[in-house]
Amino acid sequence: IDVTSELTATDGDVVFGDTKEGTFAIRTAPTLRLTGDVAKGGITTSAGKKDGEAWGKRARWVAYHGPDSAGTETVIALLDHSRNLRHPTWWHARDYGLLTANPFGPRAYKDTDFKGKGDHALKKGKTLTLRYLLVLHQGDVESAKLEERWKNFTK
Image 1 (cartoon, one colour):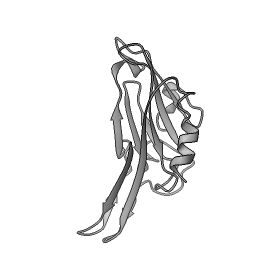
Image 2 (cartoon, one colour; image 1 turned 60 degrees about the vertical axis):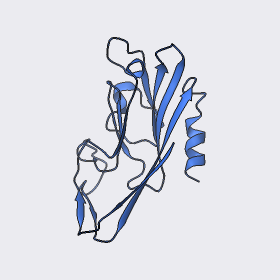
Image 3 (spheres, one colour; image 1 turned 180 degrees about the vertical axis):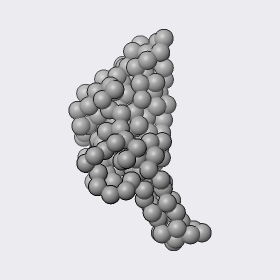
C-alpha cells in the first residue's frame, strides 16, 4: 500500500516540533508483538537493528515479523521513501506493536549525530510531501525481499 501525504501550510508558517510521536503509524496484530500473552514476533530494520534496538534509530525500513493468529509466518513492514524529509527516518518501533515513521524526532530520540534543532518549519504556501510503502507479506522476513522492494519503491 503506497501512501502519500501532502501537508500544506495554508494559513501561515507551521512548525513541526521535535517529538517521538511521528507522522505515519500502524499497530500490529498481538502475535507479531514482542510482549504480551500471545506475542511471538520480532523486529528487523534495514540497518541491522533487531527488536528493542530498533527504537529511535534511523533505517530505510522496519519490519515486524512472526506468526499470525493462525500460525502463518507474516511480515508487516513500513518503507521510508528516499526523497522524504531527513531520510532515512527515525522509527518509533515499540515492543507492543506500534510502528511509526518519524522525520520530526531527532532530539526526542537522542540522536547525537543529528546537527541543529529537530523542529521543522514549513513556510506559508509550501508543501511537505511524505511517502511510505506498507508491505503485508505472508512468509518470513527474508522472503519479503524488503530491500529489493525499497529500491523499486524509491526509483
